[in-house]
Amino acid sequence: RPQPRQHKSCAQNPQTHQKSSKRSVRMATSTTDRQAPPAPVIEGTSKAEQLQEPASIAYTPEWQELLEHRKEIEKTHLRDLLRREERSDALFHEYNGIVADFSRQRVTQKTIELLGKLAKRANLQEKIAGMFSGEHLNVTEDRAVLHVALRARREQKIVVEGKDVVPEVWEVLDKIKDFSERVRSGEWKGATGKPLKDVVAIGIGGSFLGPLFVHTALRTDQSAAHEAGKRNLRFLANVDPVDVARALNGLSQETTLVVVVSKTFTTAETMLNARTVRTWLTSELGPDAVAKHMVAVSTNSKLVTEFGIDPNNAFGFWDWVGGRYSVCSAVGVLPLALQYGWPVVEKFLAGANNMDEHFRTSKFEDNIPLWLGLTSVWNVSFLGYAARAILPYCQALSKLAPHIQQVSMESNGKGVDLAGRRLPFESGEIDFGEPGTNGQHSFYQLIHQGRVIPCEFIGTVKSQQSVYLKGEVVSNHDELMCNFFAQADALANGKTPVELRAENVPDHLIPHKSFTGNRPSVSILMPDLSAFSVGQLLAMYEHRVAVQGMVWGINSFDQWGVELGKVLASKVRTSMNSARTVHRRIKPSDGFNYSTTRLLNTYLAGKTQ
Ligand code: F6P
Image (cartoon, rainbow, N blue to C red; front, side):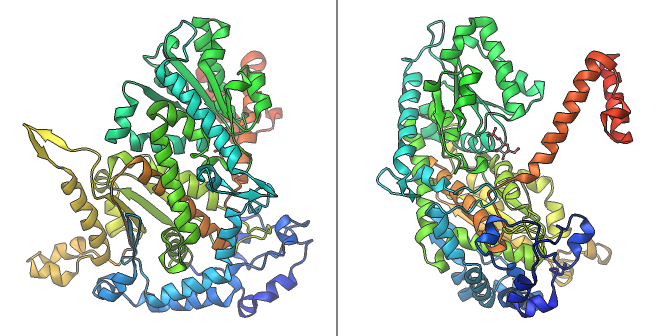
């Protein structure tokens, strides 16, 4: 098991580390540096330092207690823990139809108490309150983190720097409602007078994954599908021309509305795709078609106008909404309202708001997102599990894992704390997932007998669909859900050689057929998959991620790690363009290393032959 990197004297006295910090010390950069006792501070004074961000949580007695406690937990097995009914009761949480059963986590009452103490030490409650009241938790960009305001009820008040932001949120929502109703009713017509029944939403990352997740979840919900009627919603994200071809395949310009979604309106992929699709429209319908066939969602109204989209056809949001937390802004709400109509979207927002209220107001002991976050911290930082599998037993949730990959990994995959000090532990986990039962026939072998990967099983009591066969209802839902229940226990209990021998398994196969068990999971059971519960699920995950970041003392709301690759791609683009037009080859003076120069020239040679 990995030992959290610990500086002994600091661990004994949490203040020592802070006091000995010197602002002039360089930032640790190499992997080797990361293994060393934490380097004190980066140069300069960061916002977090001005706020006197305390030394890392890893140097507190509460963290130490959990490290010690891990030794006790290592002596336990889930098979035995699950025999204690009162423990299971205490770990079974319920809120407004959603059940979260933590009994298959490797925790005891003592773990819960110690995690509670850690949360207190991390000032978790104050940080959560700070998020809801618009504190600038995103210190590196000096921004509030207020995605909860996007789904605030009309009568709620969220005052930030003396201003209630809820009315401006609803101003945009009202505009979306009005616009989407005009498009859906056919009152808003395309350039040739036809109604617009198909929508292509162009965007990437947070301007794509969340809306895709919600759309995929609702597509087969009977009431949402009924509202969608014969309308189509497609997404175009990748700059790959194949994605463009697939997104536009079979669509007619005359009946297509294009929504360009980009918070910054500078993202290279989105802007190139937007220009490509604009040409697709105007080459058929003429330049004036943009006014009727293209709208935008962005915080950057200047660039939207420069692109040629009428500002009246632009839907704004605010810099206090992070891209990956923007599903409930116009980013998700506009495409979803166009597809499913306003009442469905309203239910989705109400579901998210409902989970926000639970997160904000529930007691510590009963707070589901909070315990999802704290048990994740326990799994990553103390038990050393680096990955997490998101396993919905629900095909409609097939895009949940890709969305949560971004929400979680872009938020919590950080190397330094809020003050810029290198973290003395790894933050974040590797999220991946696939709906059950498909995943069972793919990677479950590894999670049963290979590496230990904490799993999140998500199921619903009712299916979105029943299958009708010769007039009789044949529900496959029970069949699906049998697996949901079975897998969690298979991971927890395992199968011992004694049990195998009792089944007359030959000796030579016993090692192969044994399952060590003791593999943690959480089971989340929802009543159904409706617009409301999808909203709850989305907010639950967003808050889980925030809780983890708040405990680790990192900024879960910036994403500097995506920048370097973008800059290098732009350099490659410049050299490639000049190679194509002038030199035919990348030259050593272009500044790439030998390997990259050779690889680029191989590529260019292939394309130019
Ligand atoms: O490259 C990552 C990222 O910055 C994400 O954080 C963001 O969701 C995505 O790009 C898209 O950004 P935009 O909405 O500004 O086009």
